[in-house]
Amino acid sequence: MTKPILPSWRPGPVRDSILDFLVAAGEIPPEQRLAVFDNDGTLWSEKPRYPQLDFLVWQLKRSVADQPDLSDVPEYGAVLSGDRAAIAGFGLERVALALLRLFENIEPEVFEQRVRSFFTEARHPDHDCRYDQMVYQPMLELLAALESHGFTNSIVSGGGTEFVRAISHQVYGIPPERVVGTLVTYELVEEGGRPLLLRTATVQGKMNEGGAKIENIQTVLGRRPLLAAGNSPGDADMLQYTNTSRLPSLALLVNHDDDQREYAYESVAGTFESEEPIGETAARLGWTQISMKDDWAAVFPDR
Amino acid sequence: MTKPILPSWRPGPVRDSILDFLVAAGEIPPEQRLAVFDNDGTLWSEKPRYPQLDFLVWQLKRSVADQPDLSDVPEYGAVLSGDRAAIAGFGLERVALALLRLFENIEPEVFEQRVRSFFTEARHPDHDCRYDQMVYQPMLELLAALESHGFTNSIVSGGGTEFVRAISHQVYGIPPERVVGTLVTYELVEEGGRPLLLRTATVQGKMNEGGAKIENIQTVLGRRPLLAAGNSPGDADMLQYTNTSRLPSLALLVNHDDDQREYAYESVAGTFESEEPIGETAARLGWTQISMKDDWAAVFPDR
Image (tube, rainbow over all chains, first blue to last red; front, top):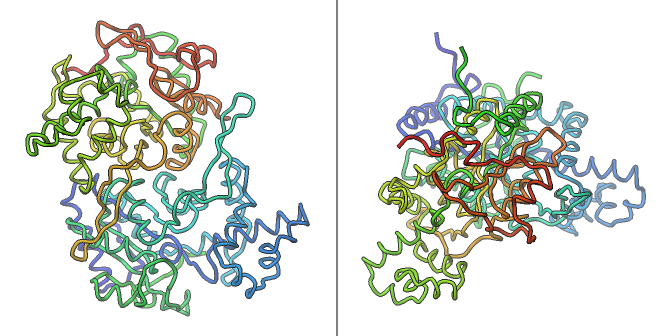
């Protein structure tokens, strides 16, 4: 008797297309079997806010408790009072960069520890569980099926590389070198003969969205993927890059249409230069669309 | 009966220090067991010239056969006629950048194929074998021992990332995402609805030498190594970064003192800002120094 594969995927054309792809990939040398996954909204829930944003606010509250005058920083004040109009006025990027300053001059290991504390302590506002329990069970099963078929799984996220790396091994079984995201810059210093790296508050290069995802897949992972999964316009380039490989390939778009078990929304995040809704892009270009409502028998792991 | 470990390493303090380290690393969570290796002169021979340089010249000769007026390019003319004075006048960096133009506007897969052809066809000038047969047998055994002890092995080379990646899996069992080197920049274009990346002739960021190796280890591999091996001043920062980890660590310096089986020379390549010979740095900082002559029972695999 064989162990059932993809048990949380309902029988139907989407599950079939994954199984067909796994069989076809068996003909390809294992070193070319690369799968890339967006993170927010693809592997775990990004609602009501990106987990990373909630982490930054969580850290801000802790920092203000130690150092009350931080709340005088206008961006921090707006975040702490939940003043959406002020935040919108600053723009999300400026607010995010201001929040990055909370981690200036610390070693990467210290940052990692803070991220892990967040995942241990913080509770998701709607589901009252740990944030890492907002991972999608069917995607965990897809990662496992790919790995058992010789694939190298990786995460290609618009979020912070180090944020995702802090939990990628524990949550997804993906080691840090296979997490590609937006990077901060480090400063190399020496303390008592010990070289060490300190985080700065500046981002290295471009945000990892849109076409940058393609470039970073090549420069970090070194080959064109055979499978890509995403959910937003920021993933469109990567999905189409994968879908037009000269080898068998599969491009998967997660559609958030389940307001009972998760959320129902059309994703508009990212940098894809188009007014076209992402579902229409997917239909036009022949990607495989996952309906969370119809294709997934379970959304989250048992809690 | 257990399989012998490190059979090409002669018994003595160097081999003992590796065995002691492997035992100590058993106490550390596997996800932190990262080993980084310089490539040229550490994993394979870099003499009489870097293999990558011989590859560039090999490609130049092929390109000139197709397109004879290329030899009018001054840097190419100097290389083709072996005019060392002219090459020195241009400087190695300018010559290397000129040679990079031979690969402008090609896809990464095409570049990779050319590198593989070189390794299949070209013969090492002194040893009359394939270049990949100039790999050091004791280092292959060290890679295997580390892997069997749960380590993630990676290459951190000053050379071109894509050049090393083309053969890293076959030669070292190291997949492309664990090769950190000097990167070219890509241009993202679309051909008939197909997004693709084309190589440019410009280098992305800094050469991967000296302090840049530390920064790139963090940004690409995501943690501080427990073991580092190198042979030149360009590896000194990385070796000391590893040696001052707060966990058990091992910094290995390969000394080229075997003019019978390999070459005898003092490595001066790299960017370490010091007049001090690298062996003296190693002695001062307490790294483990490998004498090729004394510590290795065999240098190369059986050919």
